[in-house]
Image 1 (cartoon, rainbow, N blue to C red):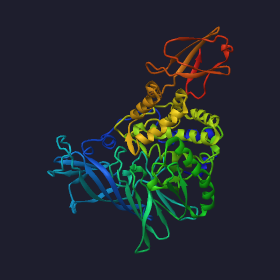
Image 2: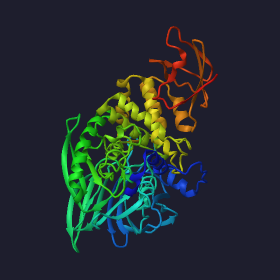
Image 3: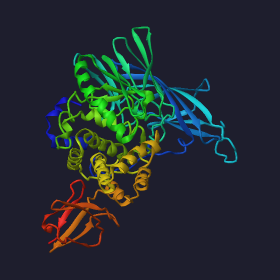
Image 4: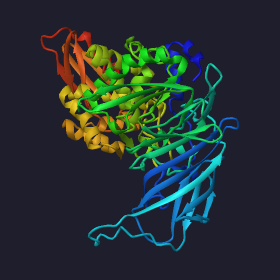
Length: 570
């Protein structure tokens, strides 16, 4: 991201954020193609195999902006039989050069748009679907996929992503990738669907000139000098990881580390890789925010989900991304979002937005991942709410409420938050602000932070390292809270309508009802009569409430923690 964006005021930043934070074009109808379906659905060429591990070896050519590499795809056969076809995703102009299977060249594959279809004609994979078999035998298979090409170059990372071939302030190469939404298949062959993470993680080997460092996810397990002035850096991720989170960072990095002892009393290594000339600024900024962030998030969400792989911040030539155990940091060591507060409350200027937000994704997005990107509000809504919880942990509930209320200003209500399923299509960029506001309202209605915290921690325990759907999260919250929020979820996630509370004041009687809402919408809401706060339970039918001896009804107002509209009827 270019530094020029910093001249925008808060309103301008909010507009920029909404337009480019994975939001789709406003009110634009799209005709979905076969390629959309191939990418977005689990079809017959995808459902019979389960990725276990990726073994990536990449060799970037900085001068030509090309890469070549190998991805060894380890998988289990979960649905056996003959004549299987296999879909491997690799977007043009990248190409598959060859495939090795059973130590032989595999020739039966052909391109279909942004995919390759491998044909295992007449080969019988072990059948694991027979329920009469007392103990299923899962066949373990590996394919070595050789690939090369000039990958798509990012236009406006991370929102319009791809490979980023930049130079630092001293003119030295500074290279990385951002591909959420666009997909990891923009640069390496994989099963490019969020529902299938490599269960046993990945290894990433990167060949770079000796003068540069190469950083990736997980832990450094080998650094091997090679001929012609190059070095291979090999990193290992032990935990399941989203395809788009696997990234290389290449640059003139310097490194330091510290330790964090969390609530489990285990040691978590905190590793920081920054450009050499930014070392002192980075030490000041990271040391101030990282440990308080981890303390706050472990309190609210439970232990950091990837102790085995460590926690890393890596300086990047764009704003930031939640790359698991190797978070991209490009906020220029400023407080807020490039120096501005997205909430407009002032509280967002007291901490570094990218450190807090992108780290929040380690719990929501990386630990808990949605099967379909249509449900990405689970990633972004909960993570944006982590900003509220971090503010509360440091500055108190009133500060958190002010921050949450400020997020309402960034909601556009252009299209529903949840997008169409099976076609690799996100919903509205409102998944951030509106998703966070929805969670904040649910918290108000539960009105018991002990229960609310148990729900957040329970999500990260019961869905630990799993891929899920929005409905599962919704049902979980309903079950654990004892409150049916289903109509709220439908209203705020599946429509773009903002509910309107119509009310009349007749003497000391208040009359009210919900309009502009889904059928049977019945969200309770807190209201004030002067300084008195009371829960009212409107439905779509007019209801009465008597004020009695309370302060005059003309001072009636709604709690600002609720994202709703009101309309007084005379």
